[in-house]
Length: 541
Image 1: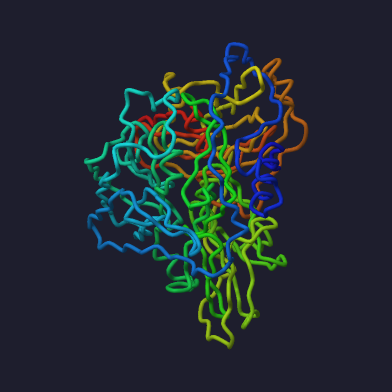
Image 2: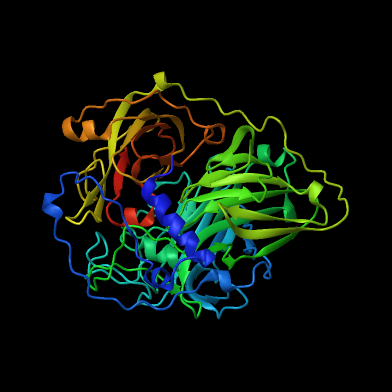
């Protein structure tokens, strides 16, 4: 169920990418919104008058020659057991397309995405993250946002490995940031199944800017079971990190602003330049055989609807927290920010041909398939692993949590909350270590929100439509239809899932791992930066 407002915004960005919108839209690139419910917002009607109109001319990616640059593949770090990696956060330059000047970025290890870390289940890994960034941010900081106040250092960083089961001290808590010139060592026990994880900045108030600047990378966790399956590997296993950006005509990042100089935050960011592994419209030369692709949506706010041109089928073998029970045949896949998909594409019948990876109607990249047959010894088993469903009866508590947006008097969103609470409100979710709970998310907004919990993995129980107006008026939950079970590709272990508008989405969660304080939040980064993030505390058993 795609939300109407986000669909409209995505459509506008696609139109700009295709060159069919007037320059006036491409130059403004400001979020537009349909009217929202007030949600009791009378006290928030303080909308400022715009005082900035100057926006640089933005690049139309349709003017670039497609499929001339090879797909970049980030370097791979395979540390020895117990080793300590040292990865620097630094300002870098990277050419996103051969016809553009190098783009100024902030990166891990000098590239965007940063190096892919490969770790093995059960083997402890330590990473020393060194902050070598400049002391001034090159993107617009809003000092009105919680955690980004004017008395805070402008440049701060802390790393979160998304999907990792780690002690609280090593999780990358949003306020555990450190400044340029400092380092932080974090320990990753890797006591979990093989999975497609990723790492990124998680700094309170400026995470959205640091990720937009390029601070993200893949973290692949392997185990003996996965390695025994015979899946495509080596040169036939590649990451595909997807994100979108707005670029100026001289190839530099542009982050859109509200037009108010001292309050530049905008509720959503959508770009018309779609990057794959940090490249615009790249190509990948492949053999006529199976390939495995670890796909990550690392965008600030864009949802990708992926397909192969001509609706060629492909297999999905995994999601956020590892392998599915069995392969799922797909012709398209809708992936929200923070979500991952483990895909197998078979090019055997395309020898000498080509096919494009699409985001709806627009290509992201092209696969050029070499002529001739290849001896492909890889396989995709009919059974990948056992994924038992967690019984509802195991839950000791059910929590009902709302997803809220608050608008000003012009119906512009200006604040996002979870369960009506601010970041600094007392912690209200305190599960016991080892216990199982059901978290029911009531989405009162017009957006789909990818809700992510740190530390844990969960399963989606179901989604069910409800009457939002009745709930807003009386806090009565009146369902409008039957519960809908998750689709097969969502039936595995997740750590981020799409919470649709006007629906109750239920997660069943066992709080395994460690006691301590963690966070749950929306992975639309502009939302998370404006208080759509809350702490939770896992109490000792």
